[in-house]
Image (cartoon, rainbow, N blue to C red):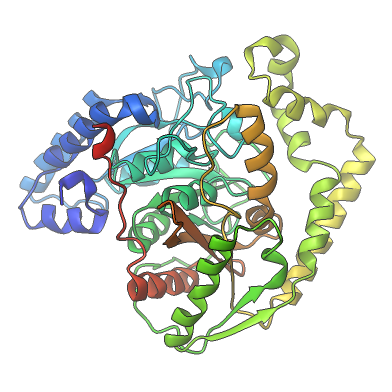
Length: 469
């Protein structure tokens, strides 16, 4: 296994043992980017010089015996909504292509404290509006599993970069599924934490009330490490929660015996592909073998969520208010797909918006009551495997409308969730399994995902990239 195909834990152990250097790992990643980017398009910008400088500094500090962070020397890519001081932050949009961030996002600062090496900024649907990463000003991103297919979105660049071995870890942001959908399509682990677990300070929002920064990784262990380093209260973001220090990596291998994991019938709707449903339902035997209690339940609240999404578009209001000056003065600089979605927020009456907020809060309370007797839910992440690259507008309608049904419920209800691979279609495309937990239950959620991963080896299947090298 080459260096750029290794996990963060594997590389960290080898660097601590003096077998390899951060410069060697970073060089391997940069060489991979140079070889594969013409086909993949995962990055908006790559800072090769800066990354090598960071790697060399970490090697120097390690040789001097200095204390280093837990991601010391590990290459990491950032979705281009996260501000990095002195670098461009574009949100995949022409309107921001020259914007230079004046400071680090809190998530970036925490990774910097952990001595991660920042490789570059990854591609995304413009202003995170989409689920296929086709409508970026900087061009589409392709799925490394099959370059004729979409990687999902809006964090599709981050997912493609990890899946193509162009980085070891990546960060995305998830408003309604934008970390989990590309993780599902690309065969990765993607974590959507409870809202407020990770600071949104320095993150350009799609919706400040729903956005969650989350890691994309090859393994649950790597995702847990990144999450542990990122989580925690932040004075710069009053919506973060003052929870006890999280040690998500310490008890990953504890047994899951006795946990009640349930399949909600309403998440297996008629548009869910037969192969996807079969693969997800097959996980029941794995969890039963691990001595969890497996049941099927009815969660009718999903229909109420569908009604909520069909009503006032809360995100449209938030987005319009944030970008209205740009929209009204430079409408021709936005992708035609996103303009109607942004402008929809202008037409919504304040009274209707407030009524929707009240209904949303009531729905959250009802959902938490319904989940009191359940530890975790098991659902398909997406109803189908990655679709073919098509007309961006057609895919926007198909992927955005259908894929968000199972994932957006997590954001709207204030829950945490993780997507991880659970099989392949007949065409060899990844199928995503979504595990959903109650608020702030990430430690047990990661333990459940880790147990499944260890029992099945589900994250060991890597795409064959030789076809286009």
